[in-house]
Image (cartoon, rainbow, N blue to C red; front, side, top):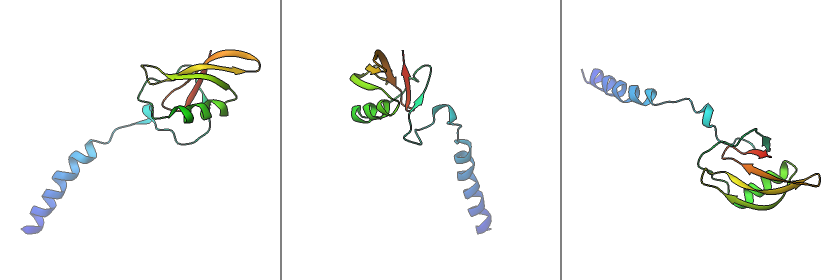
Length: 99
């Protein structure tokens, strides 16, 4: 009888825990340090420091001249590449955008 009670308790706890698993592929964490280009930055809480953001944008080939974090959590600023000045951004996923 005692084993049945323990088994029922384990199942009662494990059921809700398994149900709480969600697909996070649309909000994946940064898994590598390589810079990736994106067509538009993703909005979200950005944990990159300014120094990390500058370094990641530089890896994409840009020389950053100014950088600030906007209300959407995107590091946005001015950079040059190939002699052209442009606006760059870095989202929480590590994606670099330029326009």
